[in-house]
Length: 281
Ligand code: SF4
Image (cartoon, helix red, strand yellow):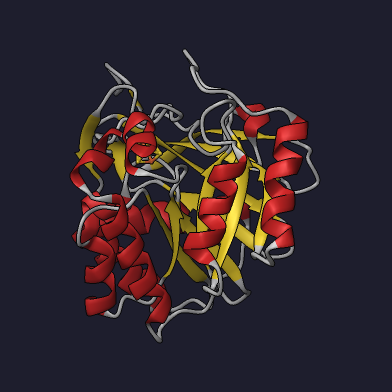
């Protein structure tokens, strides 16, 4: 495994995107930046089978899972190239290419290995795979959780996250609530919510989120979607975004309104891609 391309932007966070060549000539991508603490964003699969409509990573389906060893090596490599120190507080996000809970055993083994000698917090970001959040709880995996919800009901979610047809919306909420109650958790659960124009940006959606998460230890992270190829769903207007956020605010819901770091070099959420190099010596 080696880094074959490093792209940087001068955005004040020293954001870098790395293209990493695997031994079978597949290429994955990973990202690093430093806000208050350092953050690295790792991939868990080559490609992705989930096919979310707002994401580039799944456009060509799943090629294969990364092994636990590859995930660990990816971590070491990105830390080294970013010149980050494992002894400092930082974040390791499984938010790159792939759905980490569809490669659960390898991600779990990599998490154990990373945790052996670091103070960094590990956050698994998932669209929600049936039974897998409960499995994290059972396995006492030392991670925090981020759930890409992006919708307030089953039909809406099925339209943008095809795999959600296999996981009832209310059951997903139940698994999130169970995770919230577990002891081994250091951060609020992040509920990611991309705000799409005329789709999930209505007053009723904001009120539904309030209803689901009032008095829960979660943070609703409302995000602007990143540009991808053949994009069909776009960011709502700034007026609608403000109205949406105001409802969360008025109801004392912990929230953040943000846009992905690194979108200028296609390093934002949903922009990373796998590829393959042929005839490499
Ligand atoms: S958002 Fe995550 S789960 Fe959905 S297609 Fe992209 S990588 Fe896969």
